[in-house]
Image: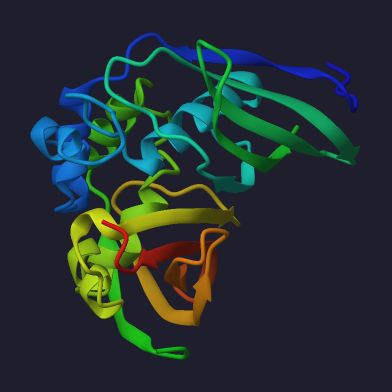
Length: 131
Length: 136
């Protein structure tokens, strides 16, 4: 496959972000932050998020990595840098997307992001991917 | 805080942990005993005998709710794999007191961790958090 700048990476969708998986992740990470497992804590914030837990940053990043793995294989990732302008909440339907910005030999530089089904970008970053 | 070094440590990802990590992302387990790259987030903490809670305390977090993520930067020199005892070295790269656009004070702290296998570099994680002050 000839990959070129401007190519779109096939999207990867998480149909419904799971509060249960956030709890599992909190245990693995030993992460005490109740925003990931206690809906009442989230509801008490002045952010009008309601009774929904907030996904851990690494999990949202994981959805983007899954997209890259589906595209170029499980050992394709060289580097990924991510910012977190939005929150991912349990029950959200989110889509990982990306496109190729340039290609150097066997390495593709990509813009990647995670967006809510309503179009809001929740994570934005870049990735270097072995082709 | 800048220059603070965490104790060098070791960590091995076992199959059960690798399986759960992939499952949490909605993916199947990876082939050839590869570990999902998101493991690079927590391996350094646990290897160094620290934890997210202790990092929060190190930055004098006002509460668990007061931490905001600026960015994660993960670089892989080879894939992470199960049942390898990785060596991890980490330090605080920078610590700055800043103000946001609303003139609220926060501390921007950048942590960097290097993973190696028998002194061969495997991966590097640089995470940048904002410790907000008097905002929540």
